[in-house]
Every structure is written in C-alpha cells, then in structure tokens.
Length: 348
Ligand SMILES: Nc1nc2c(ncn2[C@@H]2O[C@H](COP(=O)(O)OP(=O)(O)OP(=O)(O)O)[C@@H](O)[C@H]2O)c(=O)[nH]1
Ligand SMILES: [Mg+2]
Image (cartoon, rainbow, N blue to C red; front, top):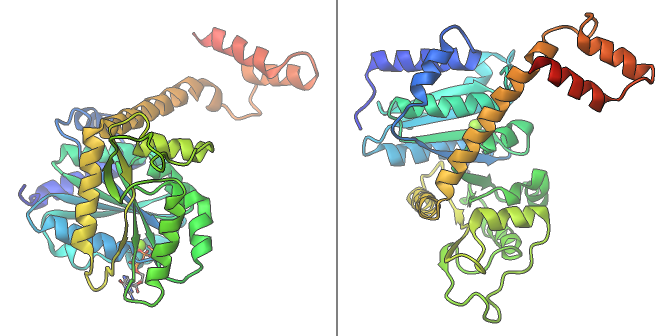
C-alpha cells in the first residue's frame, strides 16, 4: 500500500478529531467508516511507565512499515487533558517510524470522551481501517482504567516488562499477567533480563502447557498433557482466549521474548510471533469473534446512552418523573425497581 497523500492525512486527522470530540458531522464520518471492506488488525501494547513501550512501538512500526504497509500508531495519554501537548510529545518516541510516509502517529487523551475511551477507540479503528491502514499499534500505560478500556479494542495484546524494577509488582498489577497474548522483556541489554523472563515463564506455566506459540495436541487426555484445572474466572477467560486442549485442535501459549527496543534487538522475532498469533486467531475464529464482541459492546454503549438520555439530561434537582419517583423512594413509598419499570413503560 502506498503512502497516504498529504491531503488525505489532513482529512484523516480531521475525521479522527471530529469522531473523538463528537463534533458536527461525526455521524456521517462513521457511517462511511464502518462500511469499510477490510479491518486493520489492532495490536495493543501495554506495560508499566517507562518500560520502553513507545521505543518498541517505533521499532515494530519501522519493521512492518518497511514494505510500505500502512501503519497507524495511537498513544493513549493517561494524564489529564490539561497537561498539554508538550508533555504528551515527550512521552512519544517515534523518531524512526515517523520518518516513513506510510506511518501515521496520533495521540489520544484518556479523558474527555463523552462515551468513554472504548467508544472512541472502537470508532477510530473503523476510521483508520476505512483509510486503508492495515495495522494499528495502540500504546497504553499498564494497570490503569484506560488500559482496561482500550484492551477490549485490541486483536492482540503485548505486555511489556522490564528487568528488575520490582518484578512482583509488575506481575500483580491489575492481573497484567492474565491479559497478554505475548510478553516482551524489553531492555534485555540490562542485567536480570533472564531472571525476569524466567519469572514470567513460571507464572505462565501454571496456566499453560505445551510450547510457546501454537500447539496441536493429539491426545490431550494422556497423562501430563492435561492443563491444570483453571477454576478461577481469570483462568476460564484464558481457556476461552487461548484455547482448551481438551476440546480444541490447537491452543496458544503466549511466548515470552527478550527484546532491546533501543538497540533494535529481537524485533523481527517479536513481529513474527505477533503475526503467528494473529494468524492463529484468524484460523480459530477468534479474530472475528473479538471484532463481533467489540461491535456488540459499542452498540450496547450507544443504546444505553440513547435510552438514558431523557433521564440524564435533566439535573437531579429539576422536577421530572424521575425526581418524583426519587421522592417516593426516599419517603418509603416505592422501590427503585418499581421506579425503573414505570419510567421505562412511560418511554416505550
Ligand atoms: N537500556 C535500554 N533502555 C531502553 C530500551 N528501550 C527503551 N529504553 C529507554 O527507556 C526509556 C523509556 O522509553 P519509552 O519508550 O518512552 O517508554 P514508555 O514505556 O513508552 O514510557 P511511558 O509512555 O512514559 O510509559 C527511554 O529513555 C528509552 O530510551 C532498551 O532496549 N534498553
Ligand atoms: Mg510511551
């Protein structure tokens, strides 16, 4: 795919801003964007502050962008919308890939979205896909609300860890070890990288069997081949996401790769592992399922907003049917369920 002409970049930037701010005309933009004939694959990159996520994104974008593939980088800024552009600029290190004409880079504030970050992210993926982008790299800071919100948008999630820096803390934060499809230990030029890798591997060994990558088990019932029973909700979610050898032909075990983004070490291996996961996701139907679930959530979010609009528009002090019900509940004459049912009947 060729580089996007300059005029198109301006149109794209404007379209994204319009969608992000819900500014005039955004519905027309989205009506067209969602009719895209192809969808970009979204790689989410998360990890603690300063882990080298941006440097890694830059290296991956340079790697994938070398053949002209159209790549979009979105960095989600978790700080307040008032922090200004300079701070945001500092957080983003896209020196190499931004020189490529086919790489588009954009930052996005984690706050200030009417329908929340997930809603905006889902729409922006559609807009970028419509403009012919094939890959989207989405950087978020690990273990925050914005991370969880954006996580649902990614087709593949890469968790970045670093040597030392309180490995235990890294692992435990917001169950970050349960969200990765791949793990990268960045800054592996530093000491203790191997130990960090071992630590992550041993954590994964509790939940996964087989080798890193795609596994095909002929006889999952043979002794030693059964995965340990995963009875926690997180464990069950892993089986759904990466396959259950007892019922499925193939499963995925997240690989843990040592990389040094600044020195461009291990990048092609990481890129290859990512593509292997995406291919497996597609073959096993999970890619489509994820897309469906993203759209499902988006429609529900919009539906909720529309349904609630008549009630949320008024301030709590205005006299409305809702406030009348609140009066009744406060004075012990009704219950919230009765109020909700009555208000709903009234609106339909
Ligand atoms: N030693 C070493 N340092 C690295 C490597 N990769 C990145 N760094 C450095 O780590 C620091 C943070 O890098 P960033 O890419 O900004 O990290 P980040 O995770 O995006 O940071 P935030 O977005 O602020 O959370 C920078 O000084 C990088 O030069 C590496 O492979 N080895
Ligand atoms: Mg960064």
